[in-house]
Length: 370
Ligand SMILES: *Cc1c(COP(=O)(O)O)cnc(C)c1O
Figure (tube, rainbow, N blue to C red):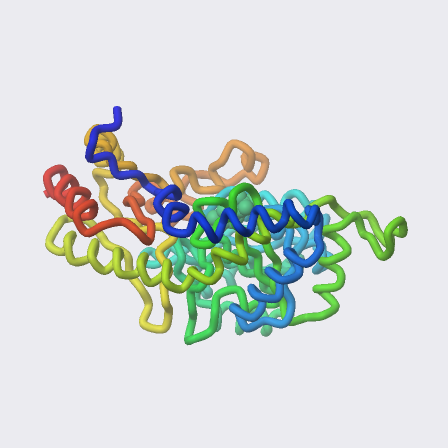
């Protein structure tokens, strides 16, 4: 039961309260213009997001999952092809690979950042490998320069899953502007989230961009002319208008998340939990603030009993998901991912979380873990 000191995992209401007029005006503008599908709101947001990332092309789509599927299709990936990714991610990353008819091949992660290990990626390459999907998990970029080098040596495409990393940087470059393509989700809880489903594919390649613009809209080349079989997977104008308003606040929100992460680090120093590792060349945007402890399950229950919303991202590695039983992978195949799945815990994290709320969370952790 929620108590009066209830601290949620994510608080979207407090963000809306801080920008109610901007959001309401954006929604009203779309309704007044009766321009709900494609049109200027979508174009304006695509242009603003591309500018923000420093890429030339941004293609709005229906969700982060649609972004991943369309990016793979745009690269011509399908049956018989293999795509390497991490087992420690949200299911949609590998699901997209399966949906285009290709086979996900997993490589294990680094124990401290939870991101793909570039050396293990290289070991997983076969003659069927076509692409790599690194995930910038929890808001910290994967080791992209090394992954790009591996990809270039073997002639592979790199599709960034940047669904958790809006605004993060790697050697000063924005996540989502480093690979051949990148996929974003605007699911409400993401660092940049809309009020429903939304997504984006970004690239510097005009040919891939043109293909993606067709694929998201029924393969259309004219109102009733279809060059190929595509999808109904457009970003809707209401979400684009909301996202344009929110994008102006993204850096300030990410600064809030980073300040909150620094406070948790200080509060939890000396406590018997592992706090997040941030590489010196990365700017981590803390979609999730994730600690590790062997007492994870008990701690999760204890926090819940105190009205504190923790999360587990993610409890079952993808190679051990029932849906991937046909891949024939057994426990022990990816030990670093399996250990992470058993011990990670996400603490309440949003830009507006207060030092007082964080002190309550840290005190509860210390009382349980020691
Ligand atoms: C959220 C998320 C997705 C899926 O995005 P949707 O917009 O929910 O379809 C894909 N990959 C990762 C890593 C995510 O966090």
